[in-house]
Length: 351
Image (cartoon, rainbow, N blue to C red; front, side, top):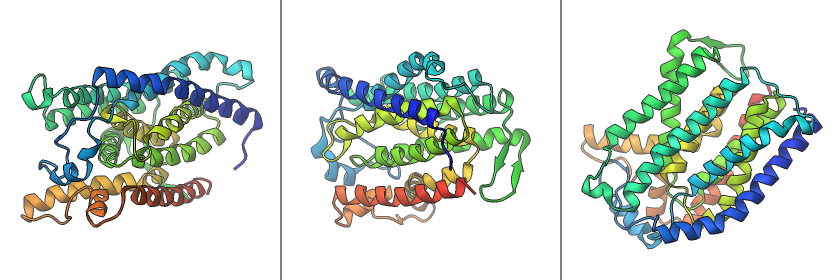
């Protein structure tokens, strides 16, 4: 894959700048979260098969008090820097190029990034301050799921009507699925699926953020080679902020991404894959997210229809913990598998 030097110099500079800004902001941000008491409470209920997560509490309640909402900082930094840096691109000699209308592409990316983030932020707020247990302005799981579908359908319709995307190319083959309007529900399903799968994966320190970093490097390479200015700049800024966050998120974490980040990051990762047109690559590099989501779904279905659990506890990373694997060991091996999948996905994208 051939990279244009002038493009990569600019994007690497933006990544470094985003990393520096995020690094300077993150410690004061953590202190602010402590002062606001915006942090994880004990005995929270998470979605591991529809039951109160006793196993999760047993293994992770020592982390109670860790601030959540790191995703909010990343969203703010990336959004502000993007709209400050975008006008400067031409000064770096970088022409604005894309296969789509750049303004609609920009709108779709940030609509997903911010709207799913706001939904997650609301959920974090309820859980951090105990309102979820009292029902004060609370949303049931089915209501949050319905809102996710609404947001995903809006994004998918914009992809279809404004950008004219209605196909799913199959990497390394000449096969292209011309879906027509059926593209809208399929794209929405992918967006909702990745949003929830990322949320489910975000259960161990550094697990989901490290895997996301690997996925973004793959898509950054693909978008840069295809000269998509909007995605290349967006991913560069996202990576810089994410790397700064990951320093504080590895075991033992001082900051968690929260639902504000996990829903936004999972949904936006899916949209990036749809925009690039590498849906098979998205499934390959995001395979661990998918596997984690499917493990929770299988647990729910097995309890409902078989009357028993197929896993000791879901998602799968909690089963590994229950079997005696230490948290850093699980995360490190997941990263290694993620790197392997990322290399394979990048190779497939070049064919």
